[in-house]
View 1 (spheres, one colour):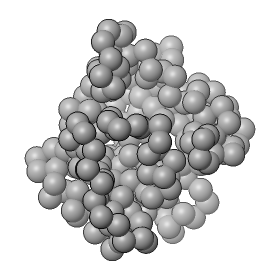
View 2: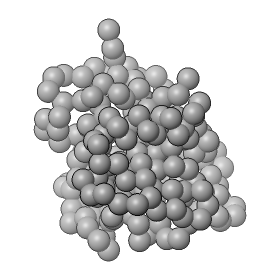
View 3: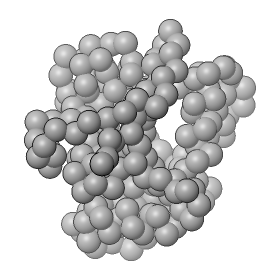
Length: 208
């Protein structure tokens, strides 16, 4: 059954990007450290058209995430920061729905990625992504505001966090105070995979 899944790397102190993120520095100062665990992996390299790479549990987690994704949802800020680094062939290879306030024609890229700009809010973007994904999952690619919004709307089925053993000390938090979530949210841990570089946590919002 199709799920709505958030999948994101996070520091021990809860940041998904370092300080001073912006054009030319999309992950902020030291934010690249959050993704270093993925770069050597065979599955990550394959997403980017590269050969070789390391195998093992981390690569298997990455490959699983790629194979289950039928469509993506992201915020406009993430799109703006990532469009340049992603280049002419973004790594999604699937429909991507961008939550924005600005009307814009779909942007079709080589390799199967089409960015569709949705002005009707997060719930509309998730609904359109579900239809596009079919039996596969809808993956929330970020940023934190989109993930918090989907959680607050009761639409999040699963949260997968790749916890990197580093303290960034500042930057963009995954869960800011409030952030649309107005009451305590309990999660159930459904899987833990540990390696020297990163700990993969799979969590499910506890629902009555």
